[in-house]
Image (tube, rainbow, N blue to C red; front, side):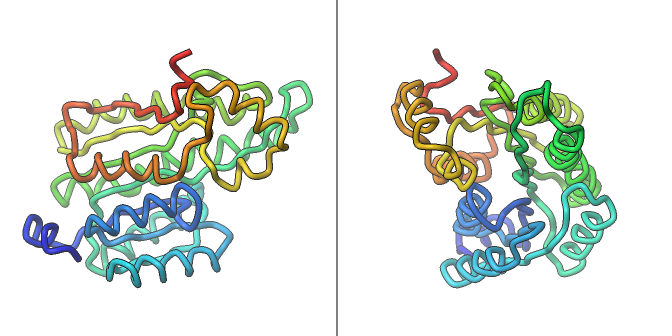
Length: 256
């Protein structure tokens, strides 16, 4: 743990990153470890990726990184993970609600399960994880929650009614929860990225990628580090007077 962080806080603080084994979540977890926080990664399926990320974090920064396999929508499992982290001495200071799925399709032909599964993971999962950590954050004297939304929840995107609905709801969730928690010294923010180079984007056809890049004023997709840099700012500075703020790293897409 960095000397700067230890001298400032004198306690062992842990940040939970859901969906932290790869992509945006992995970059966020590594960035927070560099700041000196211990990390707990929650993942649902890819245990190999989670183990590799944990190994990288511990090797590069000397920071402890715990891994837990659990669905963010599983109330019992998430409560067990949170309690285990606290029992191991890692006082929960932060939560990154990053886990999410997509099941794209037009509403007229969308199976009900594709609607419900996206709502359950993206929206209920954010609710479930936040609710689980709040009593401990309050007991520990404060904390920070960052919810990963999407530009699709601000501008809307064809064939993404389920995904867009959840990400729009997460923006509202963030703003309301931020007001609720001011008196408990818990800050809440959201990040609504545009197109970021992740595995989700890699499955798009070259034509779709080309068309989307043309519409972005910066004419490129973002990097996962672009999101991690915002996380670094939030956790290093905790700009609490920006309570409920939604950061929109999208290359200028929301400006047109």
